[in-house]
Each structure stands twice: as C-alpha cells, then as structure tokens.
Image (cartoon, rainbow, N blue to C red; front, top):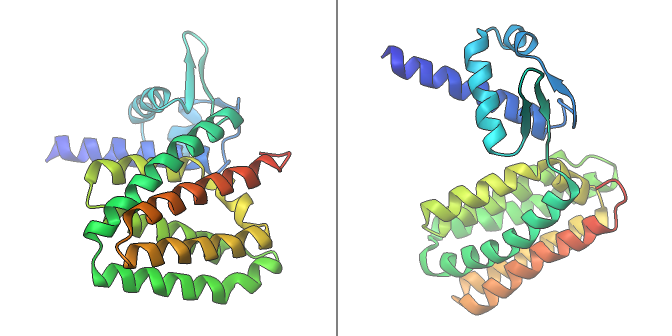
Amino acid sequence: MEEHQDYSLRGRVFQAIQENILNGVYKENEELRENTIAKELGVSRTPVREALRQLELEGLVKIVPNKGACVTGITKNDVKDIYAIRSLLEGLCARWATEHITDAQVDELEEIILLSEFHLKRVKEGQTQQVTELDGKFHEILYEASNSRILKHVLSDFHKYVRMVRKASVANPERAERSIEEHKDILHAIKNRDANAAEILANAHMMNVMKNLNMKEDI
C-alpha cells in the first residue's frame, strides 16, 4: 500500500509539473527550483527531483549537474516535427477507426461537431475554450475508436504536447470553421467505411493545421 501511495504521489507531482510546462506557467529557460516547487505542491523534494528526471527523459526539462533544472519546453522545430509525425499517425488512426468504430462513438463524434458549430460564434468573439476542448475530444474519441492502445497512447501524448499551439490555431475563426468541416469529412468517410479516404483526409487535416501555424510569427 505504501509503495502504491509513493507511486501515486510521484505521478501526481510529475503531471503537475508537466501541465505547468505545457500550459506555459513555467516558461522556456525558466529555472525550476526543487524547494520552490515542493512548497507549491506541498510535498518533499524527493518526488519533485524524480519528476524532473522523468521530464528530462521526455525532453521538457534540462538538468545541468551542480546547477539544477530548467525548462526546455516544446520548441518551434518540435512542433513542426510533432505535426509531421502526427499527420501520418492520425491517418492510420482514422483508417483503423473505420474498422472498429462503434455506433455510440459515431453518435459522440456527430454531437461534438454540432456543438462545435454552435460555439463557433464565440471564437469570433475571442472565446476559444469550448471549441478547443471539443476539438480535443473529437480526436480523443478517434484514438479510442482505432482500437489500438499503443496508437492511442502515442497520439494522446502528441496532442497534449501541442496544447498551446492548438489554442492559437483555433483562435483563427476561419481556421476553426474549416477545421470543423474537415472533421465532418473525416467522419463521413469513416461512416462509409472508406478507409483510404479517411486516412487521406485525417492526414490532410493535420497538415492544414501545421500550415496555419506556419503563418503565425509567434509559433
């Protein structure tokens, strides 16, 4: 029981620090002091130290001997690489989803599209949270529908790593509207059990997101 509690604590500390990095709370090149983070999270330095080591393996943190840790974060090149790789994997996901998707999952995806269209007007008013969350949920259901635990895990990590970038993309009303249309096309192909079309459309969807990001100077 004690070992399980220790593991749970390490996991919670890891997730908290990772979230703060991916959400921009901890900025790129910012020093991460074990004492400060331990006090913020109400834990000892040990789980913080272990979490930082794990985050270094993921490339989000750099640890310099005798100096400490600092945020590496997700660079512009990382974002480009993630979207290039993700475009291929999202295509594979859509292909596999045509074979395994359930009626309930189709209903969920259709509901997400309807809600996205409903909240689209808020994007034009500068409120992007609902559409961003619905966009994420659309992809998460597709990951589940692929019926592949490994593919779901990899794509979920990629999706999480570009969270801030996705928000910037959805903030563009024209891109947000087009993204919803692309979701419709992908779902239509999946419902028709057209694996080739689903794969091509999902691949193009990711490439279109990347093209939109390339036009932004701050990405």
